[in-house]
Length: 131
Image (tube, rainbow, N blue to C red; front, side, top):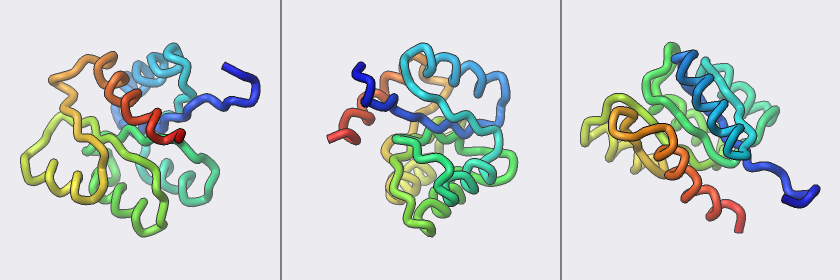
C-alpha cells in the first residue's frame, strides 16, 4: 500500500457492544479503517456534518434509537451517497425488497454468515467504489 493510498473506511452501526467490537477488530486486522458506532443517531450526525466520510456503511437493522430504514431514509434526505449493507437478525421478504428498493446494496442475515463471510461480501462491493 502506497503512502498516499488511504485505507478504505467502513462505518459500522451496531448497538450490540460486543459484536461491534468484534467487527471493528476484524476489519482493522483486514486492513480497513473501522468507524464503530453504537448509536445510529450519533453516526448520522457525524455523516451529516461531514466529520466522517466512509466508503461503505455496515448497518444493523434494529438499532436502539432508529431503524435501518430510518437511517437509510435520512441518508437520502441529506443526499449522502454512501453504499449501505444491512446486516441483521431478521429479514422478511418485504423488508428486504423495501430496503433494496431504497438503494441498499445487500441485505445479509447475521445468523447465516460468519463474520469472515460478511467481510468478504463487503470486500466485493468495495472495489467498485474506487474506480
